[in-house]
Length: 287
Image 1 (tube, rainbow, N blue to C red):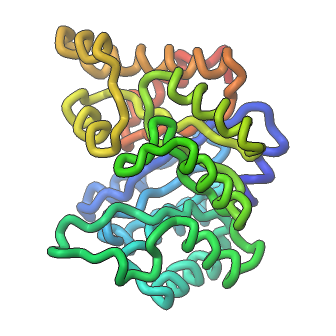
Image 2 (image 1 turned 180 degrees about the vertical axis):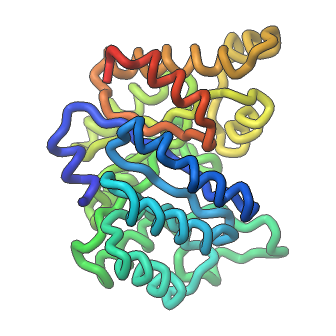
């Protein structure tokens, strides 16, 4: 089933992002315990793709597992910047062959491990090129998700042009967007208002990352240009139980989103069962 069909037919949706553990033992344990997430009844799930395709095989194996064992749709992330067109064709055909109908089309980060990397020499210089490539080669087989940045793309930050660019991704075949993490909802509300003024009508789903490990999430946020408010930093610097505070903050953030009419939410789970279960218990009267 295409995610676009779910989004158009429901007022509410809840979805999860997972990453495929690199260690084989942990990966297999994750598969064995996946029923835990199935019982939470997400509307769809997405599976990340390691930098430069470093988890490509495990991403595929996890996607295949979900496709074969779960009723909800699974959406693999695919980053294109380090791949040739033929490699991308092979990856997308492998997903098509197992019945996957949804792709999150990303350019991906410039590879830091490649010295003197020259983006002018690569085919997929941006996500728009990738979206066009998918539509040209696969027509309507894939429902294409794209990314959006409520605080601006880290190396760009020209909101007017960024929103024009997001609209181009939709015009060329993107169906919906999932945002980069944010910790102050005002950024998201302002961003959506700007998109509406530009004529964008596609779903823009807020991506929420619970702060269950402050040092880890702070590092993530810094690398992608997401602002953690000073008062929130202060709270985490002066608390003993980071996870419980992070759960409280995530519930409050999602509660505010839902009350303001944004009832479709994507959670970056970091594969943390305990935190996700407690968050959903906190939201049980809202979903």
